[in-house]
Image (cartoon, rainbow over all chains, first blue to last red; front, side, top):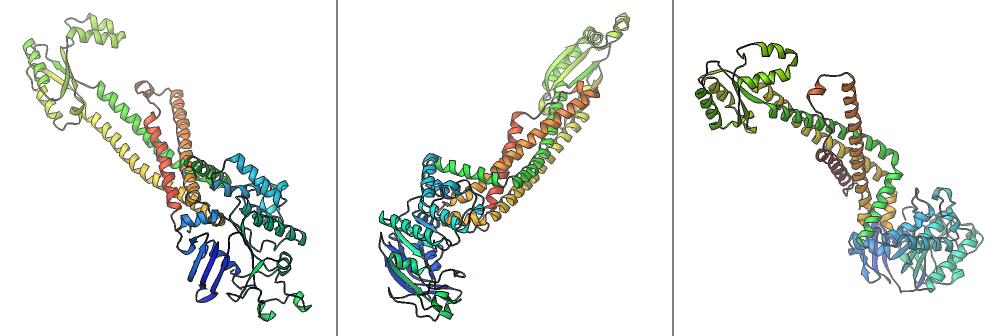
Length: 251
Length: 301
């Protein structure tokens, strides 16, 4: 489903990803984790062709992504559901409009769009806020709208960048259950997260990125905590670093 | 995606976009409306002046007055001379008795005087209708001179200069109107382009999001172009409305002042052709503006 072969990405000479190689098979549920600035968001952007690799080969759903035309890129993106880290909701459209406009591109009739939108919003427990504007919602609610939008067209591949970043523990667990349910139905799921507890809880396959490289699966990050930015209180107490609440400047 | 469904989505998005930016669009429509209104005023002037020229030309005939001593042979010769020329479409001989009858009909208050004078003081005349091209012919004055020089002719009346000047004024107004129309249409197109460009800048985030979720390119750019077309169309409709209002306002004012011109010339509003031309101009300006605004350097691909 997703294949990276020796992919390198540089921004003005600075290497963000180095020789990244991995394979995610159709129907898998994979977590992508790593400290801030490890390159998680860049890796996700390469998958949906918002960025071009400096070298290497990326194949998504049998198609080499780097050579895609704008039209084919749009087609590829329509086959995916993407939950962005900053939600990317349209500020002047209601919750329902934000979710349903993706279906418009697929030429779905209005009645069917309305039905699907309601179902997607019900999944994320926001069906009662259909007419609200994003600015009227909390961060967690906005995140759930973004998730509903990603799910509404029943994508083959679901990519989520920190989908639980603004959710409380109960909702985060619910969200993961939802991802698992979607995965069981056959959708490939790739979730980038800092939340180690969540990863442990679900016990799914994990790709760990560290300084632009994929570590061996199950291998731990060897960086000293100071290099990761602000010290996590969990580490001070001798627990596993959680990396939660850290943003990644520039991806 | 089916074409009908895509078109519907595109229009739906275009109208939603217009509604969201309604204040800016309203200003743009007003500005376009004023530009097209000015073009409409010129068209209206040109249309009516052209009509007046046609009326004057149609009603213009050369009148040849014969001397009382002229013979019937001289009159027949003049008629033949006129028919053989390339200027005349019809020749009508009007006897002195007929001329007197016409005078009495036109000036009834002088009827007694006109009938009481004997012998008939009105001369025999010949009226010559001109061919349409003859009026603009440079050799017409020469023809008039030759007519006056024919045996038995007393006088020839025809004010060709006045009609020529009127035609010149109409042509000037039409040319100025066309030039102004072009300038104003380009101005309207740039106004629309700027409004659409501003809308694009305001919706840059939205465009990025649409791209990221896989919106087809025509559905990203199309609504902006559609918005431009709608603005141009609405601007043209507004201009036509304003034009109709001001036209009827002027007519009422002239009627109230009992201006003598009102009885002489029939003024009319723009016919369907020029009205459609104005609306098409607005739509084209909108399309051009929209296309200018969505060039790749404005909507980053």
